[in-house]
Length: 89
Image (cartoon, rainbow, N blue to C red; front, side, top):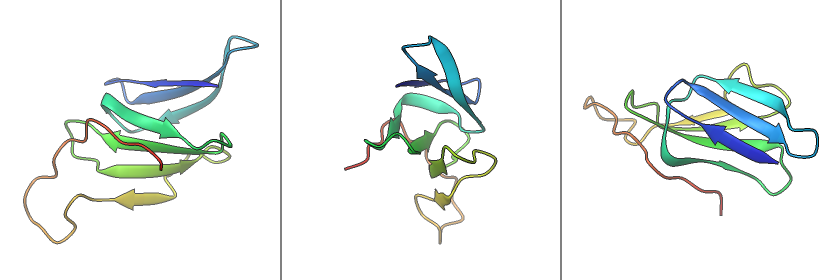
């Protein structure tokens, strides 16, 4: 599996054997190294770009909406920062 994302708000998951896209997640604006996948290949983590999306956890079996939205500061009225790097640990 290979995953890629960019400012076009499309995260694509690729099967390298068939050289085709297996999943397409539309929504997060990826900036820098702000996309990661679990070892089992079922869950994707994205960090928001310039629109302040925060962190989003996606189930690749249903990519219509994120499983979880994590804002940098949920109690602040200030603009949310962009996230340029995120990783599952």
